[in-house]
Image (tube, rainbow, N blue to C red; front, side, top):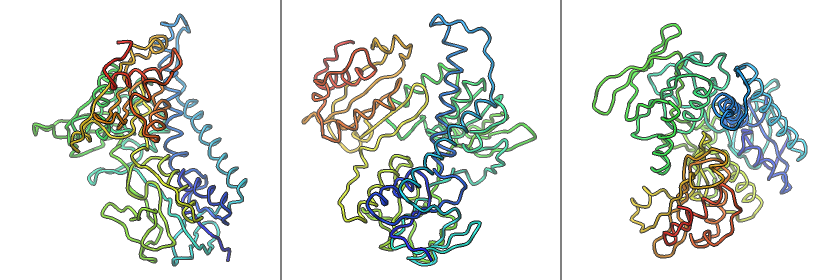
Length: 465
């Protein structure tokens, strides 16, 4: 029987990063993955393939709608969906092979199969060959799966999740998206660009409801301009398929029954922690009422040598959160004292315009009774935005009214998924709005909007509005 200092169950961003850091710290490390490729949801059916389709569909939309504005005449443009999907898969394959290389480089043993606890220090692996390994410590990094509603039957043909939406054989005529969160909006925009009619049905009264209200309002305005349709404050009650037609039944905020008919329904109501097959009962690991593994501040379960990270525990289901947690657990096991500030883990929506946030929203500050000031700057006032034609959006900075410390930064616009890192850096060092305002930002750049918003928050003295 092979023995290890640590075994990681799950090879997504949290799992494989934990494995690499453990190996760097001198631990004999094994990683267990049930699927034939490494990388988990993010690399195989999540972050990477969805961004590949978002980029490809963006190019297609630019070619048919925007190239002419730039003096580029390309003639008739046609869509090759099969090739677009193939390119997406090529990106995925290249990325997952990169993880294989990293495992080999760091001398991490990879086991393919379903890992389940035999006891606290032994893991059975059911694969082509059934084996048992011994591990002094184990990290559960099994991630999450798409959620559904109890009355919806997912046939994975017409009533689908994000996994199936990444490889559709055709562009839908009318895609109904249940859920106005990140996944639904990103994939909805992909197919809208490719020619589908898209209707988003959302239970809450706004899209991206966990983000700042100003972002929800701005993104909704932009999407409506792009001819996407929205049914907010609608509770779905049934989804029925009849041949190639799917009907979504819902109740609006006034209690009226409404129906939406399309040829595809994307169920994007969130994700759930995935612990199937782990045999947690064998070691007495506790889970909460949502099926998430319970952990302490060190991400340790109630069994002291078993840890859990990423989507399988509480908190935002984000790949970069899982990576930070994987690193944290590895360093704790090595006797170090790492730390994660969960308030400073950014959230991003990769639509166009992009949406990005870090820190507290305006709604959260009001609820907590924190006195704050706000500075906001529109992207349309930037020379760089006008040059590229990306004038939708804004940057908003929220700062403490007394100390001027930045408490939250919320952006909508071109490349804000990258710009948010400036805000994270500033807040990590507890910068004030004036600190950011006094930093030189290259001209012309989208990043100038951050400086201008900081100026607006400091003393309502933005320069270019």
